[in-house]
Image (cartoon, rainbow, N blue to C red; front, top):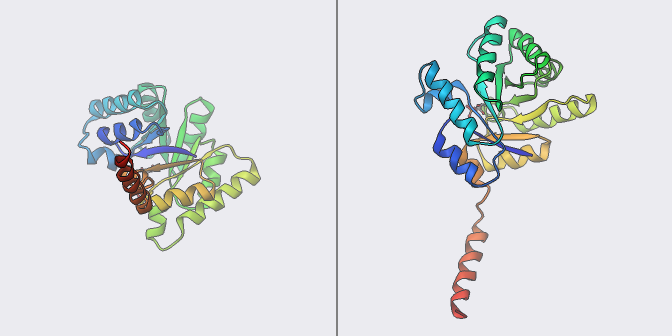
Length: 217
Ligand code: E4P
């Protein structure tokens, strides 16, 4: 399973990248706003900086909702850097645009996916990635990880090549459960990724080893 970081914060991207396990980055308009990126030029520069920092796919989301506008905006995003993946919302014109991008060799990530039916449509339209939002599904009292397992089963039976990118991750356990359920990629904020490191027995064990090591130095 690939690890992407879900942020537009350069310091966090660098920290995750320095671990040596980072395969890519996802952003969205809310994450860009959170780090204070405003205006077309600043947005373009920020995506370029991220893409130059990380050796992997970087999802940049369109903010258009009609076919022609999504295609035009997506072409501009794609032109910023070869690793930019155009992130397109799961709407009717988004599906048409995903097919257009697929026919024209531009990689895509279909976002805001909350059902297996939507995931089937994204695969049919040729999306490279489909992003089910696990945490937001859990918030609405359904099981987000169960959706990952269902999509993985459908894609396997049908032979769809779209990669399942588990998004809206809230905890280290989400990451583990998504790996178990068959996600191809998990995109997570930094904290849940670092949370995977932690176990109290590791800390206790290390403290003892270091203390004992002093006796023979
Ligand atoms: C997906 O790519 C989105 O950027 C993201 O995972 C949404 O997560 P949230 O529900 O924490 O906003």
